[in-house]
Image 1 (spheres, rainbow, N blue to C red):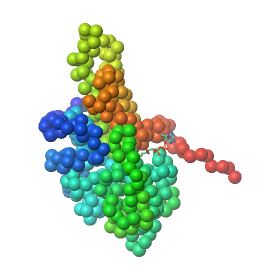
Image 2: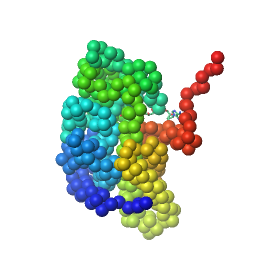
Image 3: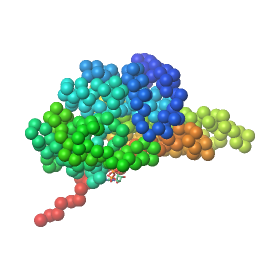
Image 4: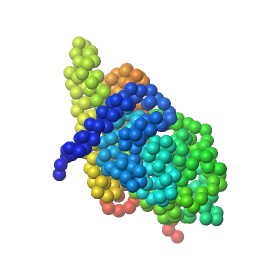
Length: 384
Ligand SMILES: Cc1cc2nc3c(=O)[nH]c(=O)nc-3n(C[C@H](O)[C@H](O)[C@H](O)COP(=O)(O)OP(=O)(O)OC[C@H]3O[C@@H](n4cnc5c(N)ncnc54)[C@H](O)[C@@H]3O)c2cc1C
């Protein structure tokens, strides 16, 4: 067992940090307060080989590992937390489902513009009555000739995306779920009134009114749900990486602040009450980082193990939020302003405790791993 990064990984970290310091550090504050996805950054990242890190070279990616993507997110976020989104969107989640299960034609039409940084994809999964209970989704895909007609609605996706990977129901039960691709200009597709997340990012309900999906835009047919969830395990690593990276960002900022800010004629770092906060923060970050690195590096030899991914996401989500919160406290009134990125990191980290599997749902999963049995969350069936 070796807990240190390889020489190659250290060199990769250095080169990403150099790129991020030079290209992204300026404007980090403004970028964080822009509700739209930073498309200019995505194009820059594409040029630097930081989009599609986990996508095979044959599909236009850079053929790296999940661990490479985790390290890239960490290094980019050191200089511009918001820009880490571009790395995450380019390596985890919907893009990987497309790369894994898409046809060559779909990869050419949908994946290629994503990898060039020209387009953005998001997953459209959550519905008004199907949140944590994803498999209750009602959006239907009804056969029409060789294709399908989609009817239904989703909530919470980014309304500025170009492409949507939509979870649909071809038939009853979990086995009836699959997914299709569509672009925002599809006939019958509409975007409702945008709202704001606490992070400042936009979301909006989206509607499908008899949208025709040709057969070449079907990604997974009925029975595809389990495959999608495997993709989701990797998505959880992307979500966890940003929680951790944001926590590290806040820790470093608060540490520098405590080394220079004086009160009562002494540096903040000399007060034991604050030293203990730093000790707790460091403990949480180290634990989260080790769990995340374990999940990511073990996944590099196959698909991510669900138990390792679950515990890593839980720990990173909690550590990121708690550390950002403590950093804010340590930085006093300044921490609570928007002059630094601590408040932004805190708000983003809070969202990751809900998105991509809430902390409660992850704890339910952990109970299943611990007791090696399934616990249905549904009410018991009436005995007749
Ligand atoms: C920042 C952000 C970005 C998002 N982006 C997207 C996106 O791009 N695409 C998309 O489709 N969706 C997106 N979502 C939606 C997200 O996937 C859902 O919010 C999430 O699945 C929870 O569903 P819900 O909001 O309906 O909450 P509910 O499922 O109604 O849950 C409410 C509360 O009850 C808890 N709870 C529910 N069931 C149980 C249980 N069995 N045991 C214990 N506790 C339980 C939950 O943990 C939560 O705390 C995003 C959400 C956020 C916050």
